Image 1: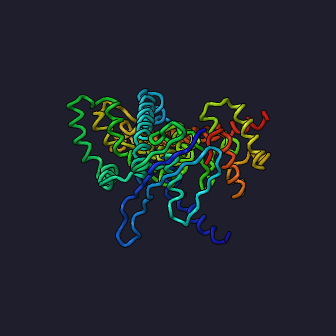
Image 2: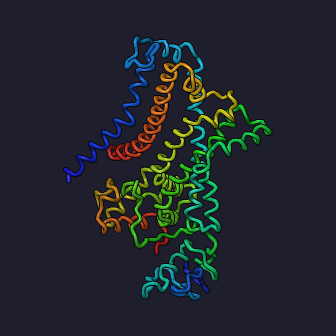
Image 3: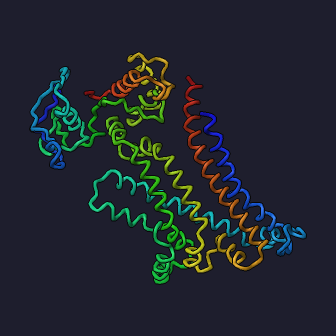
Length: 275
Length: 162
């Protein structure tokens, strides 16, 4: 058995190296380069000016990171609140024309966001939601919600109604049933959906740009002009910063989840000590 | 004296596809069980024993008929407020709680203080012969032990058990 794993592992390692790790090398080099012109294989001189500009000269960087994360976490929280009852309905209730509701919820994955955003923009213009963080949050929900609903549906469909019936017979009302029995079962699925939701929200450019009209500055909005013909060194620094922000956001989520499970274990351990 | 009275309880399940067996329905049941009576319900598979129990527990909604306990009509009382206990065919111990938390769950729902409910849970664990198993999680018990833990969980909360 062990032999069979080795080629697979080697392949996976090579794959990760080629497609994830290697592209970062020129990115890092560019971010520290000064005047790196073709056909030089390596930059002629290095400088910290790009990083200096991104991190210190340009105060809007930190603000943009803050706004990006704020939007991503609010969007994810709203998504979870919407997705859990939706998944419950999809899995548990015999619904006439269920496929239609599913098609509507999953449509944003298939249809390019640009199509919907133009309409949303017009509507938001009328009711004055453009150029606000609230409007951007609302607009970010459509491309992220399908993933959270998908994950919640998967979790729900592996939860037999028997567990809730058992809790009912022990006197648990609707809230207790959800909190003590359903939520622990859904947690891994919700975490998976939430990570996707955070990542997708963080990387939205077009939707933020159109709905925010350049007033809501997230990191992709700052980054884009430099990629499409600005200073490549600054673009690289921003890209690295963006990757770092996404990784940190996921780590925070992971840590929170681990704490949630640890708290449960710790509660069990404390009981053990007392007795 | 509290009796459990079942009058004309009836349940029909929705029509299935024609090739399959005809839809299952429970013919009207009329039954009185005295308090303290030891009552067994026997019958072949699929004859509706579990359906009748679920109707009594309120986990299924009856189409017709009424369920009375003493002088109270509980036909429309939700399951969690009926104060019944039930041991299901599967143990259904909550996998994320250890055995003593599982057993104490019913008491927790009744807002019994933590120290007291753990004490009562441990006592009940002893009664079903699982002393010292309280800290284990359900997947660390054998099938029979799980079933006994489920029994303890049903018995511990002073409910009318069926």
